[in-house]
Length: 254
Image: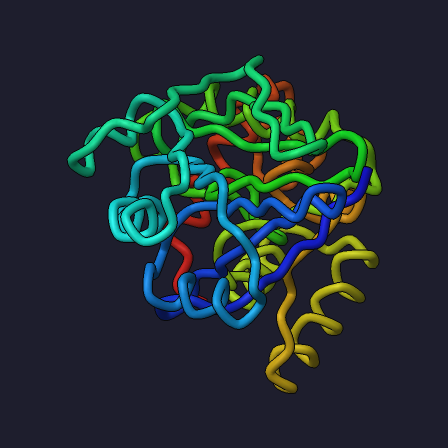
């Protein structure tokens, strides 16, 4: 089995993702940040859209559902919370469910915290994960609806995926995340990575996808327990160290 992922910019800093099951030619759209851009990309590629896979309810992720479904006849799949934008998904999924696209099998991973019902989609055969706003390159999503414990547990589920898993996160936030990371962590691997990120962004290059292994090695949110002493939290529980890093990022002005 194999898939082809087509990535393109949407809105001001979102990415759109179209995923094609190579065996059958059927395609899925991961979230719907900008309907007309997504439909134009589908037409350019000549792909047949079968599914919309929503990660969470926010309008920059599910706001194009109705227009895309009307134009393509695609089935909308997502967590129950997507109904908050005006219409429930055709199929409601939660952690532990499986969604198939042709011969491709996506495992649904519970990843709440940013929103309560947030999910991610993992193709184990191709080591590919679409994580919405839970995990970013050198970052993680703000905790709008959940708790630090919930978000930490969600990040640990993603961190348990194989290190070579390609991680498609939904926004180009990496340069900002890199500046924050350097303020809380002095690891040499992080310094080398941030230098490469700043150079890539200067050239106008994307920093997505990333990998689970790279994030485990350098992302301050996944490394939070190791940073506890530096943050004056020696002996803190892992989720407490994570909460401190998240709070520091929320107030970061760099």
